[in-house]
Amino acid sequence: MSEDRSATETGSDGLSAAEQRKAVRARYADIATDSATCCGDTGESPCGSDTDDAETYDDRSRSMGYAEDALESVASGANLGLGCGNPTAIASLELGETVLDLGSGAGFDCFLAGQEVGPEGRVVGVDMTPEMVEKARENARENDATNVEFRLGEIEHLPVADGSIDVIISNCVVNLSPDKPQVFADAFRALRPGGRLAISDVVTTAPLSDQVRADPSSVAACVAGASSISALESMLIEAGFENISIEPKADSESFIREWDDERDLSEYVVSATIEARKPVR
Image 1: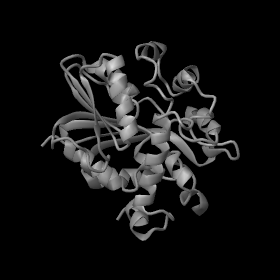
Image 2: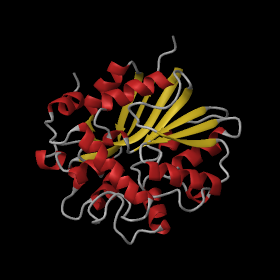
Image 3: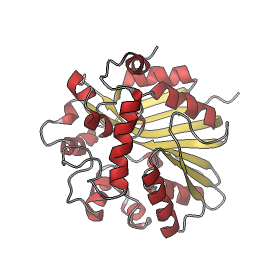
């Protein structure tokens, strides 16, 4: 049994799965409706303070590896500066592919992926927050993204058919799930044989305190739910993936340090690229 599944069942994290989902859904509903700041309303969580604007989000995205032409190619409103990396940069997307984005938010990565796969390709974004799905659909109209659609659903139970997806991407969302093994198991189900996983997320480099792990704000702010590299590798192997690669990005320390005004979170978490493939058989 993985450490994450055990923690969820025994409650050793201090929050039940329902409490974690409630905290995440409430936080991102606020983000979508502009009633709070990016990932939080205190300036002490990822994504900054209540003075954030489109220019700030673009600056943050540049630090995560997005190119200037990519930022300029998507209409304002889709980029909320929410990620911890650039999954489209590692996905090696090809024309005609079908892409699934776990926790698609306002749709920024989906629109970039839609440009890569072209009109013959297809991108599906899944998010569990109704307000965020509504915002993403509005942004799809603004971007004339006819090959991109958004569906309401949880990443543990994806609203897509078995073996229907070529590539799964995600940007700092898997850590928010209270059942990460189930996320990877359902991702495996959704992928076609030979399909690939290419996500950006945070991983722990040192143990987080029980107080942080039990704090709903820290869970919703992409910190408390982070797993170690070894734990993630075990989950991916258990799900059936092969060619697993998890690479921490040392340069992510620069923006992770900005996530909390009271402590340096780069001492505990770092952004990483997580890649794996479903066997062809």
